[in-house]
Each structure stands twice: as structure tokens, then as C-alpha cells.
View 1 (spheres, protein in one colour):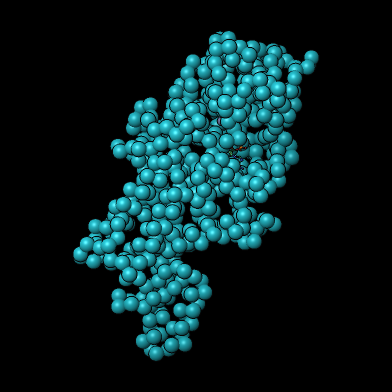
View 2 (tube, rainbow, N blue to C red; view 1 turned 135 degrees about the vertical axis):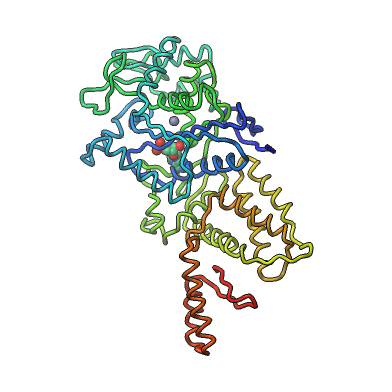
Length: 487
Ligand code: AMP
Ligand code: ZN
């Protein structure tokens, strides 16, 4: 396997050569959604970014086990073990069972990711399906002396942990700063240290989602589910752990502490974090009220939108930014992405119509292919890859217009390159003309127009041409017959 892949590791704060622990196998764990409401476009950006990573690793020949969980329990409103349970609150509001909430929003999440053409993960474990694994892990941490129980709740002992391990290893923050920014404990707190966090929480009488445990009836803390499920399916140590950047400071920091305390090893060799989707510079989030839902974007029904955009144009918009850069949402940026996406799809549709010449052509497809791999090998740089693919578009259009010649083997390489990078790696499909039915329908219409021309019914043939033109489909009469492409 020719692998020159380099990726940015949050843990070491530098780009590193990708060397999996047990090639050709790769274990990748990504924190999934909390399914108590619809996913917004920001959430989707993170999952599209990891889809790109999953696709490229698979394309390189790795056998990837991609685990992405569903958080369906244990997530309180505050990240510091405070506030109501998000599921119970929503269940009350919608007058449903908490598991009806989970089912409803899990189905919605899958549907949205299907529209964005993301590949399903290899395993999608749920927190509620892994309560016993979480209890076992909490027991191990207690046995190792890094946790304590107070009145049915088990806390992770950060003060004890920092004596042996670097608690802020992932973010490189100063422990003193962290302490100064955390609420001081008061007489009512059960915690011993202000950075301590709950591994298992005693259920109050009104708490609906509850399970028996060695410490009484309760429910797991949010962070323990990812440690327990990644350990179960990928082992004590695996290759990549991912999630949005906002998870690094608390959730992932605590995951590392739990795994170290339990297994005495860092869970993941590489930590990867995606940057945020913003609206006018502010992070898109449910709580900020700027979290558009994907279907509002597709239909154009959100007040901030001028019009709707297809899921594939939105996917293209996301991939035009590097996963570690912020991406700001605007109508203009979406319009530009829509145009770019259509140009790329137009070239894909022209590809099978290109004719090679016998002699050596004057297009350099090999060098282009090298540059495409170089872009993706440099920390999955999809914007540079897309820029290179526009060079391929230029070649396709020039050959189609007869301004450039291409020999048979270069044409075959160009075809393979476009299929690999546009379809397999970027996961872009033609959401307009991709279906066989569309093409067949167009062939019928073109046939009718040709008949009209033969019968000298130019009014009719012009009407058909203009009608198609208004839909963005251009006809071109040539010696080989009538060709079409999208404008
Ligand atoms: P949640 O459902 O809130 O647990 O979030 C699911 C995933 O979406 C997490 O990996 C978050 O980091 C990520 N996420 C949340 N907001 C954004 C955003 N504005 N842009 C990109 N990713 C986000
Ligand atoms: Zn997680």
C-alpha cells in the first residue's frame, strides 16, 4: 500500500505520518449525535467530514472499522453534570416516551445523512444498549483508585489522576487556568474536587431513564459511554478518535482520563477534530437559535435563505472548506458552491461522450492524478483536491469542444480519476441527471426533436430546444448525433 498520508493529530498538535497500529486494519471512533432533537447543518458538517476521511482511508485500501455512536441516554443539559436530562425534558414536551424521542430523531438523523450520501458506519452502538459495559468500566476505574462513590453517584477523581497523568494533554491548557474557570465547590456539593465529573449518577425519583447498578438505581454519565463502547468494539487502543472541536475540552479530555485510569493507555493514537460551521461568525448550535435544519436548506424555507439548495450542492459547499477551517454559511457562498458543483457534474456527464484519438494526446492526466493524491494525503485537503478536479473539468470540456486531444489510455485514466475522486472519495453524485430514467427521458425528447426537424417542423424543434435550455440543458448537433450537457 503506497501510503504517504499525513494527518493533523490534536494530541501532538502537529501533522504526523499515518501509521495504523495494525495495518491494513484501521479502527476509527467518532462521537455521534445526541438524538433528542433534529440534527442541524453544523452537526452534519462534522459527519460529512468524517465520511470523507472514512471514504479516503477505504479508497487507500485500509480495512476500516468505523464506529459512530448514538447518544440516547446520560446527556444532561449542562456539560458539568448539571441540569435536566435532555431526553426526559423533550419527552415531556412532546408527550412521548423517551425512547420514542430517541427513535424519532435517530430515524431523522439517518435520513439526513442518507441525503448527504454519507456511508453508514460499520457499527452504530447506543448508550442504552451498553449499560453493563459502562458499569464494568466504572467498576475498573473505582478498583484502580481513580473514582469514589458518594450517596449512589460515582465521581472521577481528577485530583488523584493529575498526580500521575496529564489531564489537559489534549488541549494543552494550564490546569490552573482550568481550575480558575470552574465553579468553586460549596457545602452542598458531593464532589471532592471542582474538576471531578460523574461516571454514574444516582437517579432522582422523577428521572425516567434508570438502570440498576452496584451503587443503586441510576444512569451513566455522558463521557463514559464513548470510552466503554470504543473499548468494546475497537480495543483498549485504536487508531483514530474523532468529533467536533467543541468536544475536545471536556468530553474528549474526560474520555482520555477514563481510559487511562481503566486501561493505563491512551485510547487513540490520533485525535482528529473538525471545525465548526458558523453563521455570521457565530457557531451554529441548537441553543444559539441559528441551527438551520437540513430540510429548511433543501427547500429554502428558512428566513435567512434566498432559495433552496440540493443536498449534493450543500455537500460540495462543505467539502470546499478544509475540515479544520471554520466554514461560514451565506447565500453567496452557497450560490458559488452550487455553480461549482454543477460544473463538476456537467463534466462527469460529458466524460462517457468523449472520443480519444489514436495518437498521443496533449493532456497530462498522470500529473493531475498525482496532484489529487497529494492533496488528500496532506491531511485530507478536499479544497485543494476540488481545485485539481476543476483542472480535470477543463480537460473534459476542451476535449469535448475539440480544442484538446486525448489518447485512449489518458482518457481511461481520466475516467478512473474522476470516478475515484468525485464519486468514491468526495461522495458526490449527480442529484439531477444521475438516474437512468432522466437520461432515457431526455433521449426520447431528443428523438422527438429530430423527427420534428426531419419533418421541417422547425417551430416545434426550436420549442423543444428552448424548453430544455430553460431547464439548463443545452443541445448540440454534431456528426455523431445530438449531444446534451448541463449549463
Ligand atoms: P451533538 O448532537 O450536540 O452531540 O453533536 C454532534 C456532533 O456535531 C459533535 O461532534 C459536535 O462537535 C458537532 N457539532 C455541533 N455543532 C457543530 C457546528 N456548528 N459545526 C460543526 N460541528 C458541530
Ligand atoms: Zn463521545
